[in-house]
Amino acid sequence: MSGVLRSRWFRGGVSLLVVVAIFGFFFPKVADYGAVWETISAMTALELVPLLLVAAWNIVSYWPMLTAVQPGLRLREAAVANLASTAVANTVPGGGALGVGVTMTMQRSWGIPVPETALAMVVSGVWNNFVKLGLPVVALALLAIGGGASTALVAASMVGLAVLAVAVGLFTLLLRDEATAARVGRGLGRVASAVRRIAHRGPVERWDERAVVFRGDITGLLEHRWLRITATSLISHLSLFAVLLVALRDVGVSNDEVSWQKVLAAFAFVRLLSAVPVTPGGLGLVELGLTAALGSGLPDATKAQIAAAVLLYRGLTWLLPVPLGVGCWIFWRGNRTWRSTLEARHAWRRFRGEPDAVAPTPTT
Image 1 (cartoon, rainbow, N blue to C red):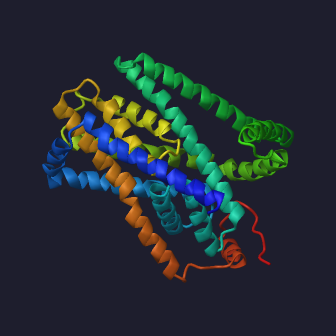
Image 2 (spheres, rainbow, N blue to C red; image 1 turned 135 degrees about the horizontal axis):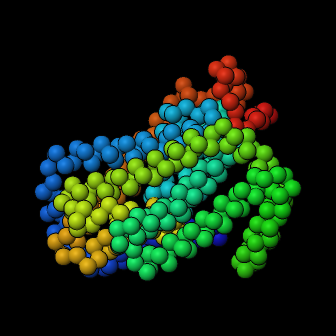
Image 3 (cartoon, helix red, strand yellow; image 1 turned 90 degrees about the horizontal axis):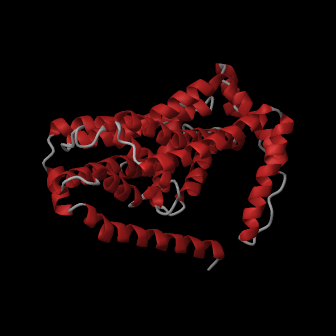
C-alpha cells in the first residue's frame, strides 16, 4: 500500500473516530437526543417552508460569487461544479483537495483553461478567508454594543483581527508592483520551506516568479470586479448565517434567550475554528461547537431546542448539498452538450464580447 493511500486511510480513520466520539459521547452531554427529536417533529409546515426557502437561497447564493471571480463562467456551470465539488468536500476526509480536482475536471471539459479556474479558486479563497477572519471582529463589536462580549471573545477577536491585518497587508504588498510581489513571494517561500524542512521535505522553488505572474493575473481580474466579488462574498456568508438564525427562531428560541448578535458570534467563531480539516465539512465539530456556545447557561429545554436548530441547520447546509452534488456529477458525466474545446470556448467568448480572466493555452 502506497504512502499516500496509507495517509488517506489514516485521516479517514481519525475523522471517523472524531465523529463517533462527538455524536456518541460529547453531544449527548450537551443535549438529549430524545428532546431534540421531539422539538424537530413538532415543527409545522409554516415553520419548515420558510426555513427550506432560506436554505435553498443559501445554496444558490454562492454561485454569483463564482461567476464574479471567473469572467465567462455561466451560472449553470458554476452551480453544477460547485455542488459536485461540495459533495466531495463534505463526505471525504481531505475532500477539499479532491473537490478542487472535480471543479477543474468539469471546467476543463467545458473548454475553460485550467489557469483561469485556478486563479478564480485562489481569489475566491482569499476573499472567503477575509470574510471568515473579519466576521468575528464584527460580531464582537455588535456584542460589545449590547454588553454581551466576554473576555474570551475579545481575546479571540483580537487574534482574528491580527491575522486579518497581516493577511490583508501581505495581499496589498503582493499587488503593489512586480518587485514587491517578488519579495513577498521569496519571503513566503522561505517560510514554506522552513515548515517543509520540519516534515523532512524539500524546499519550495521559484515562488518569487510565481508571485509576479499571480500579481499580473489578479490585478487584471480585480481592477473592475473587486466590488462585485466583495459584495457576493458577504452575501454568501450572511446567507449561511441566515439559515442558522431562522432555524433557531423556528424551533422556538427567542431573541431574548439567544440574541442574533450572539448567534452571529458563535457562527463566526465556530466557522473559523472548523476551518482546520479534522473531519469532512467540519462534521461533528460544528454541531458540538454551535450547540455548546449557544446553549451555555440556558435551561435543558432551551438547549434541546438549540441542538435541534443546529442539526436542522447542518442538515440543510452540510447534508443537502451531498445528494444534489451527486446528481450534478451524474448529469455532467452524461451531458455532452456543454462539452467544448479551449479554442471553441475562447472563440465563443470573443463573439459574445465576454472577457477571459487568463489567456487561453492552445491544446496540443
